[in-house]
Length: 72
Image (cartoon, rainbow, N blue to C red; front, side):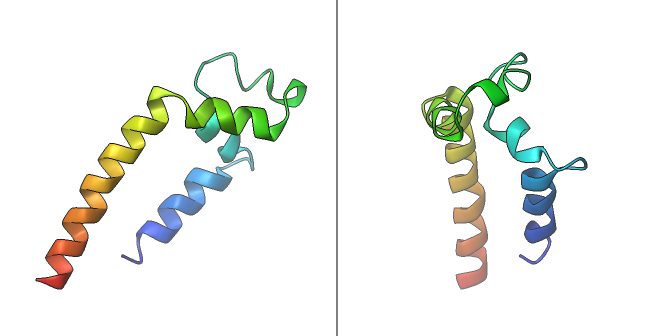
């Protein structure tokens, strides 16, 4: 479980401090347009995208499997 903290740290911060921008964008051109939009709008775009749905489903499967394995 401890290995997931550095993984998500790199995912959120990134190597250049803008990892959250890459995480929350859903298209290739979106990081260039980031300063034009508010963070709330970018977050809403992300929460309504297929990327978020895929991460949610796969994350639930992985976390569920890990919890079942640890409880068992």
